[in-house]
Image (tube, rainbow, N blue to C red; front, side):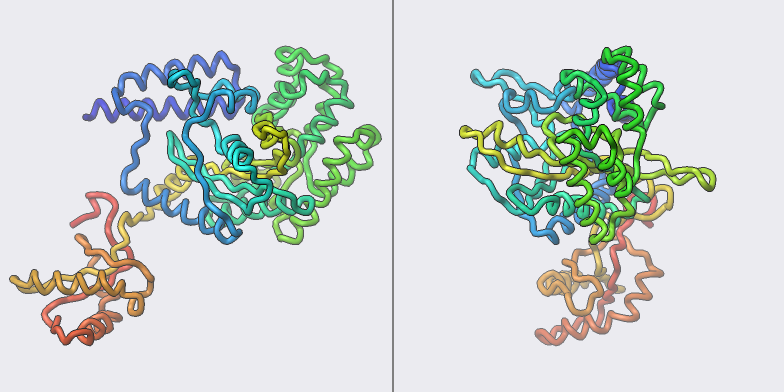
Length: 476
């Protein structure tokens, strides 16, 4: 058993290494080498290889995170859908750019080539096309495969930048509510990127490859990015330098206004459209009160090919070491963008449906919340127990069961501070239990005795706010 646990830990660490390399946009050879090591470790685990297992504490943390996310989605008027875990391979190919190599193929199923879905956006677009939907309220999607993911999407015709602004508001709302630290949301527009590459002299065929290089600027220096563009992507040095003049800029609406006056960029139709929309977007973000959380970052590209307009990515910030230093990003926790052309790829008549969406990186948030709880040594209650029924005398089991049944039936909505379903408890924090019981026990007994005249005078009723320890060592 200990050996299996040690092997699982090795798999976890190696998995984190692989994910880290992918986030850093490491070379394909290096990623493949580490993936091969991961697969060898997983093969030693037997039938459960690659399957996640969550202990009660982790499930409790996950439930809290999902409650925050889903509550926010509901406040914004969502409907809920889910799509199949597998899709035809042809549905998924050609939509993700360099990330397409990360798709998992399944064995031939009766002549059909299937793959596990890589994200929720492409299946959602297929769903819209197959059901001939051209306008739908915001939609949430949730699933469990090898990881959790939650998406929020808006499909249909709306006033310009309204859905985009709402998605950014939702992203900020969720991250504030989760209290996982300071964050910043980077925004850009694919039309600005394409226009920028065009005026700098980059060949059309290299646009997406250049995007993946520029996207690394938050992790490595411009010199390293330039070397990759020239050495690996075959870009001319002077073209790379011209691109560098742009992609190293970031700011707010003032940068948008500055670029609208740029003698080169303002002459490109695509870039001009993108900048005009970003200016309008920042006006709406100011009205929402979140403009201070948004930065226009010209290096942001997002690797998926289906994006057509505004793109964004939320990163947590590391506290500056010294006063005056800029905060550093410590990882992406949410991202999204506009994908107006994706539905038309699946529609037999080629009808286009404007779409905008965001995805919450639930797995990464789980990990961050867990780390913070451990650092603060905060207890996580893995049950929702609020009432303990105990007796000081023997042979009172039947009376206790009657009382527990009353509690379950009434849910105790009035006397309790929290409106929760009541469960029996097995462990008590005596000091906290006495203080709560002193205040509210008489109310519980009064309510129960008034129902049918049953006397529960020999029983002690304690009202406890979520008081079950999450680990054996906390139990008496």
